[in-house]
Length: 393
Image (cartoon, rainbow, N blue to C red; front, top):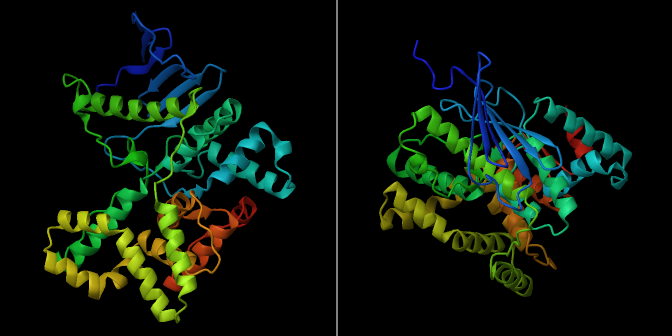
């Protein structure tokens, strides 16, 4: 049997002051020291310890809180082990945070009890609560240092490193899959939507191992890459400095104008649906063009797909199918006012509803998702509160 690089290593630890140590399984300890501090001045992390045999990263914060992160094995990036995956909208992460740190801020006794049950299930690793880049950005932009720290700590502890893959990456895959099946009669292997894969929440970025020291064995390079990715996410979320989040420029205005146009130019259901389809396809134009290029189809093939097959194919896509339906429902609603966070909510909740076992969202978006799934003939588990989620367990 081949030996692993980590066979004899129990723990590898780095402390804030530059102290480094390796504890071997036979009890020996080797120590060294860096000439500089390891973590940034504003970082909340004081130590990082890698446990290779349990595939865990243990982080400790300046306030003495411990965070245990699950790390992937090279051959298994998404070891769910039949655990249900549950995506929580940001406001429900707030409920979990308040239940832990300020229970009096959760006025409903039933919701507080449900939150405590979810916390217990997540802590015991009986469910998976993936974090997303939306959770990260919403947390990082919070100005109040105490509230940001508490929410970041809660998300990191209860997600344990599990991530919802970037919705843009999943949407691109769905389009490529549809075009590949339609024009090449073959299927692509889908990426895991809920995963421990390093930096999956920012899937559009380069995840190459080239930047890791090339003289290390492949197993060690993979471990270093996984640790630095999730460690960087944790460090950013717990950082003392907030990170402002700017909305997509022009998006809200453009959709508000189109909604007003539909309201000012009433039509029957069929024409209205054709209009919202045109808006959806225009808004997805860059993604469709990229998917077509990656799928190796001609412009004539793409044009034919656009006019004859796109509606049918999109309706079968796990996330884009729901996104198209939610977009139709919102555009067709008279008097609707678009908000800056609508794009984020639509993107992430439709992706989560397409790939997770349960989604807990706020009331209006939960209603849109439920209605959209019904029109598509799908069964999705959408809940408006944590109590509704717990009732299904």
